[in-house]
Length: 146
Image (cartoon, rainbow, N blue to C red; front, top):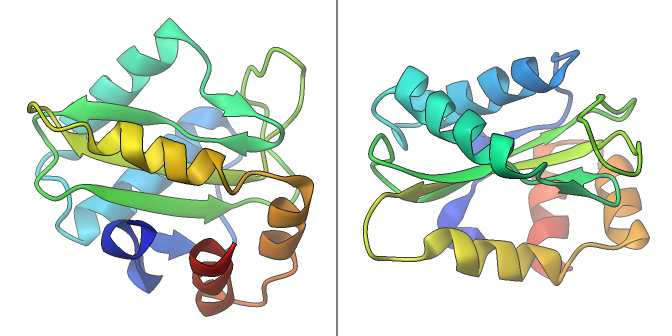
């Protein structure tokens, strides 16, 4: 499923963002630039509304997600910020790896399946492998082969 939802153009190996909202903006821009969402502002509103319900972060990985009418094609935008970003995590851990999951607002549950697949990969070794990746191609390889 990962190979259907992300690609090299949806991976940023060095996010410029310095806070949670900037992470959201940067990842959503990749989704918009790659024709996965039709309206960035609408999608970000849906992401932020979902985030209010509960913080989408654990063990150094953040996974903001939402069903949205702005989503044209289900996708995952991936970002890495090795220094970490304050995210409001209950344990105070700053995520360094970010997966923004865009799912259409219909009866399908793409985001549930994407989350299940991603959660199966989450580990300290997974984070380390992503941090040690030299470029987007290596990050994609880690995502596919973990």
